Image 1 (cartoon, rainbow, N blue to C red):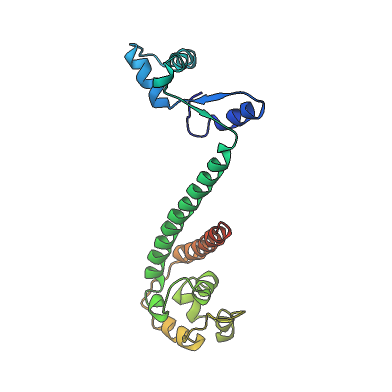
Image 2 (cartoon, rainbow, N blue to C red):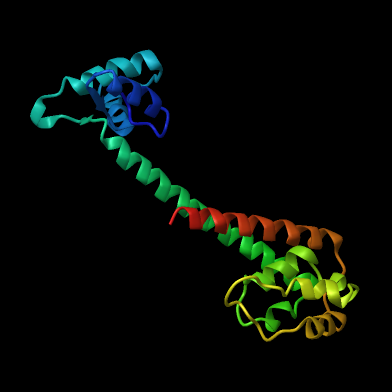
Length: 199
């Protein structure tokens, strides 16, 4: 059978588990064979004949590989690595969108922190989402975002300093950007949790 993305995997595993010998052929090989034989039309019936032609090549020139059950461990690892890579790319996209929104509603926010995406940093964005919301909130509510359980993570920024900065911010008032910030923070936190699970 042709090694075409994920389409062949379930059938391949079924055949192998039932004792069949399976040869995998690169789709480019069958495509090239079809063209060399003057074939233009492509459909399942004609492709089956082409695959048979590929299998009929001499052993020393064989254009296929025999696969075994134990290769599925490698398949699982490859899929896991690919998924981890996709998560990293997705995380980068969400982080860029988040920074764009922060620049609009609270452009001074990042200057208040030594580094981005810490516990307090994310708590504040998820809870308030804008300078306007922080400026109009009771100081006791803001302080709750600074409460960190466990060791480390202490920062020099105080709730009072944050509120004062928020009051003087040049950020715009945007309900849409505020909602988006809260959503993006949730997505970023979820992806980071998933990435930690793969380590």
